[in-house]
Picture 1: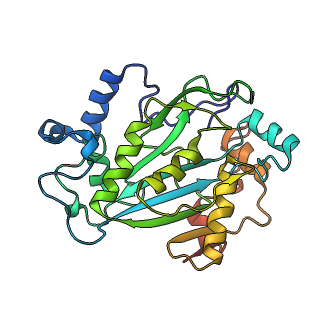
Picture 2: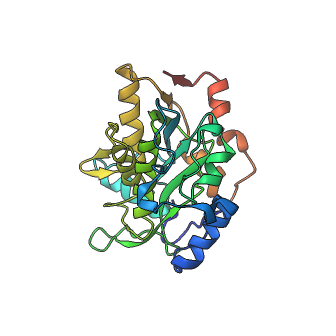
Picture 3: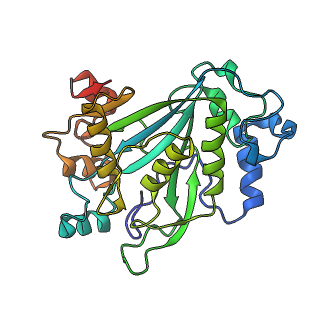
Length: 283
């Protein structure tokens, strides 16, 4: 996520703001569903429930992804947390919906999500909650700024340090979509409602149990990482955790956003590279 002063998104594959709802809705319908947007015969609040009804089983998946950019951003160490928040090293938590068999996607899928889902893959319909173009505020007394649901959310894709996946029915997918749509105009606060809050509540909207994602009442990617790690230790299926012991977070951050970005890609390995090196465990 960008800080209020130093970072701006390099990924421009989604609209930069939600200033004009009408314009953005048309844009996302065109990108996300094409001609099928005109065929939507049920209201958005119905999610994926429609004329076809709900098929048996759990044909879809919800993935929660967590990327970290600093060793410490919890309020247990407020000085270190403040330093990392001010430079923008907060990491990110986001979600993605997937139909492993895209033929199972109902024709009544919400138009802003249909095309992404039909692309397939574990990042198919990726979404995250971000501050607006002004970035976030680190002032705890005045932290709420404009916010937006970024779709697709690809800025941290392939760099996740932990993930947890859930099997979903059509109805549960609809509930996640309805929840995400309800947050398109929400306010963002790095201390209140942020990317990790959005991911946690998306899981809960589907009726699933989310891992612990907060420390001292503040939701943060580092806390989400620890929560998924604990779930994996307890034998929960569908988890991925990267063992971060020895990872140089300063080198990682510099490689991504600093003056030497692009000069030492080995300092910022992908999730797949970390897995190939034996640092990743899956259940």
